[in-house]
Image 1 (cartoon, rainbow, N blue to C red):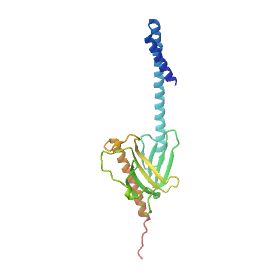
Image 2 (tube, rainbow, N blue to C red):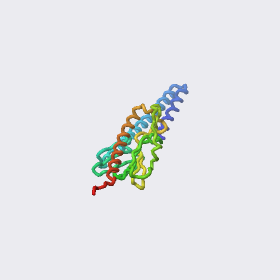
Image 3 (cartoon, helix red, strand yellow):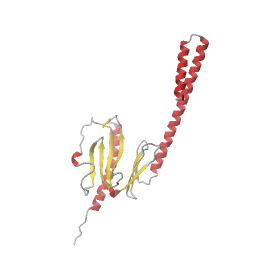
Length: 224
């Protein structure tokens, strides 16, 4: 508020200086107006600099906290709010999420053998899905709901992985790779292509995990 007050008051003095005919008062009002606008501008620049520095420090701290989680593979969002991690040594999938940089990090650890389904979603459309076929039914919908999109002109707002896991508090997890809100982008844009490539890589990793543990559960008939 003080910054706006200084700038507005300075502008008023500059208008008055332009309207007054008396040279001495005109010059005085002009100098006062110029000084007030200058003070307001300097305060604004200083506060913006402090805010940017604080944000950078919080982002760095968030990255360090997430990277401190034991892992062998990681993908970290550009805003340092979300991360998807694999710890192959402990056979854990880890989803780390926070709503804002000043909020607590929420960490969900899922054993590999507790991951039942994974799907790539573009907005509300299931694009491709891998399921543990030893489990009956699906929490992500039946196969006929999967859609193929042929048009390269379609625009996408959100690209994400959706997982079904054996975790009663959060049985369905979402990890967002791209979220443009109300400004969808074309599939031809680099931002979409980069997000889609990364999403596909993690879909493949998790699909392998699901199929690996599906095979481990298959009963083996021993020869008599």
